[in-house]
Image 1: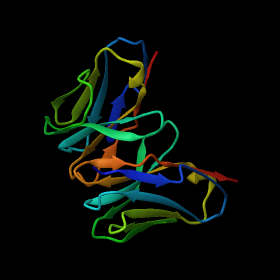
Image 2: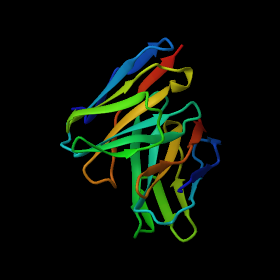
Image 3: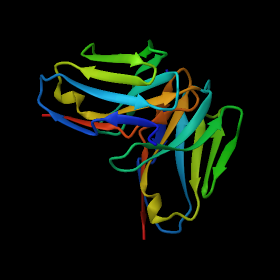
Length: 109
Length: 111
């Protein structure tokens, strides 16, 4: 049974700092690993999707990596901004999409 | 144009009532899903329909009954609401299961 864990549960950083969010999964038999952003009271926005055959994906200041053998993915956010404040969820797709519990990020001006 | 829409956005109701949440997608996708996000923000799949047929049914109380009148709609009916049903319910759709598009969510509060 797939389990997805995210560390830390919450993170507060000053503006401009680079940061890393961690995601681990127990079953490496996945099709892809996806990172989502959720703003308070809002739906999910897909940020990056890494196929199982890929090692990383980049979009602007975001870079996500995937290491299937170790069951880990990281989301790197460069030069963080207050607008990055949100909850970040990772999800592993096997037979179904299994989500982690999220990391709540707060970027202080 | 909204790709995946849900109504209502907020739903407040008393214990024991029966309520429905509606979902519609205009993406032409074959597969639709319902997820539940609890108070700890844990998102878990409840149901998945492909071309109006149920393909995933997680361990969900039978008070929850999904209904897909056509490929573009997947409604969720909940009977005899309980306090523990309070959550945010998300609908999603996909053509390729590797990429799912989520609706804005329906926040259900059971008093």
